[in-house]
Image (cartoon, helix red, strand yellow):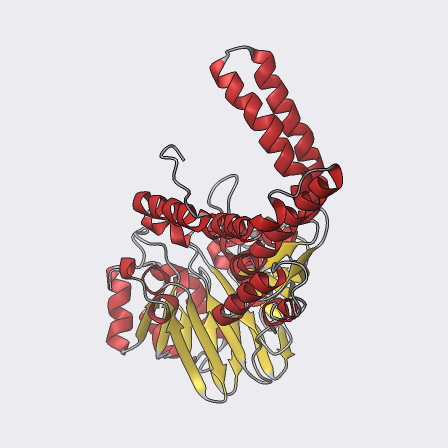
Length: 447
């Protein structure tokens, strides 16, 4: 602009893109990067429809409406891909938020930075506070939720955006709306009858896992508490289920009260429709977790093996009340053991002599030396094992001697700190296990 040259808006946008990537090449991994450039690109794309026509108030209102429509439409494919949802009331929220922030809050804040007079900043704060009251009301409105569409569906929807925003008078603009259909209505993927899909999520030092059958979903521990404002339920479990398109949880099993397993309860219950709760946590509503509890979902059998009723009468560590769950599908067995320790393993050996064999074992207590006794491992005889553990665990999990026991058995060891989320498929084709970082390799994984 200072040089007096007439530069195409597309070149200015590309220059801005270059500058951003020079400072932060990883910006392409942030949702805000794509939302910002998509919105600005859409506004430049429809610029000819809004520039030079705002001579009267009707034209100005129309131009303002076109701008809102373009920004909302351009962000829609990205919101579906990244967040699997979009607000149905976002145009209304933006209609007020954008002018208030642009013409009231930001100018007052900048003026307050130059002129140190408190009433200026107070007005800026008050304007934002009133705006937040309106936005919080908007946040209570329903949102469109759908499974994460594949990349090709998002790209097709992007073409649909371009077609819908073509100038008035061009025929066939309505066809652009049809290109949104795959992204908006992508079906929820589910196991077949008699199959089970299990995911042990990478939540750091703790445990969170999801078990799905043809029509049901079970959460086996909602993950750890990270801080007073953050937990794995909010950061990992709920986003993962939204990515799958799941908003209804049929059963939430909280194995014991330790915060690395139960810390995400509140976030999961606040964000999802939770059916019934099974736990060993005193004071938590729902039914008590007890050995011999059984149920069957679409040909997949579930059985609680631990704790027994008498264990609740004995005061001790919460680990001893950990709910142990056995899942059997298509003749394959999975044993989920939470944080049981050596005495609990001995109790299981006594209660189920010769009936603990499993194809895959969720390693007890993150690979602690207080668990995984040789007798227990021999009785289970799992060829595949999963260790839910945090990267550089402050507890030193998994312990070297424990890893040596599993290696001596010839078991394949999967670790969430190295392999990412571990996915398990139990079905007619047998047992298949994979790690997220193997399926989605990135150079920063160091592999």
